[in-house]
Amino acid sequence: MDKMQWTISQEQYQTLVSYMGCGNFPNAKIVFFGIEEGTGGYAIPENVIARAETFGQFDNGSIVSSFTPGSREDGYWEPNAQLGGQKVRQVLGLPPVEPFTGGFFNSTIARISLALERPQPDSNHWFRLYPEDKNAAADIKRRIGQLYRKDSECRIDFALTDWRPLPRPNMGKWYPEYSTVNKSLFNKAFDNVDFKRVHQDEFSHYTNDAIKRARLLHQLITSFSIPLIIGLGKIPVKRKLLEKIFPGLQFESFQSAVFPNHPGLLGKVQLNGQMVHVLLLPFPDPSRDPWKSNNGDVRPGVFALQYYQEITNRYIKPVVEPYL
DNA sequence: CACCAAGTAAGATGGGCGCT
DNA sequence: AGCGCCCATCTTACTTGGTG
Image 1 (cartoon, rainbow, N blue to C red):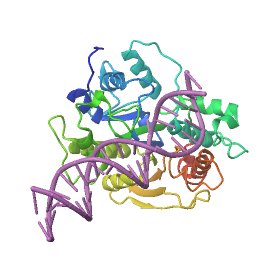
Image 2 (image 1 turned 90 degrees about the vertical axis):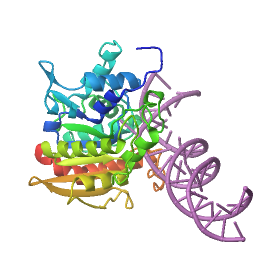
Image 3 (image 1 turned 180 degrees about the vertical axis):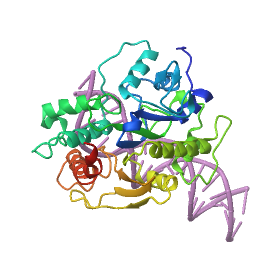
Image 4 (image 1 turned 45 degrees about the vertical axis):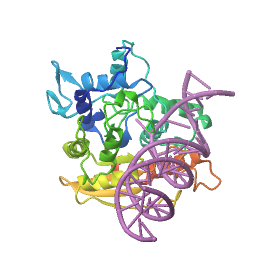
């Protein structure tokens, strides 16, 4: 890579607009719906280049993990998140490595995965902070490396899709690698999901990009009969977006004994004769609201985990139990 | 022990507008 | 023109658990 400042090209940006995420979507029973991807500890250029050039499953050099085989432009995905990570390293010429990504997002999803497959008599077993149980912590970290992929140890496949198409190390920052993208117009296009105003410049028509991603998300859910979608974070935006994508989708608040006033929402919609459930949950970062308030005398991290444990048992397990 | 992060609300800034 | 107000947008502080 050149010493000069690398910036994303229009072509790479457009390809990323069609990138749907990772996991064995055709067999996935839960699609986790994030805000935007991180960069897995690497920099932006190798993440963009890998997504645009090597992500996906190929047969005779032709991409097959795609809505229109042979082409990325109308929706494609990487079937194996761990292979995806290795492809990012490959751009830098680095050898494969044991996978691990930290953070609250993946660890929470790994806990859900283990709680579904390996319920313990000690019912909060998988929902304790790492120092509480070193063995459980090791299992959770190992499970993180098995998420969003085919041929994993998981008995229920999860897949991951994100609303915004540009991977960033930190969601609060804009980066020089994206200086060709108009930050303000991009943000507006992906935040105001009624799509009533047009945001565009010479680099891209950001509103059309967001509309395209909405259409691809609809195609993703309907093509593979996914029974459960779980959004983490940005509840109001995702609610509006999903209501727009799926006419007939009705959201309502639901009960939580752990957190009676929680902002989470549960929605249901009938698609192709199958009931699709949607859970929108507060992002599991204990240093943020709502966990740092409302928690009485329980530590925020413990509080968030207790909530996710309850949601797993009461609302996730009943939907995916037939597939266990 | 220093650093970092898949949010968010409150405070700061600044343009548009009507009034004097 | 100059002032003050409102609203949209941008910037800052905040806090906890995990990592090297």
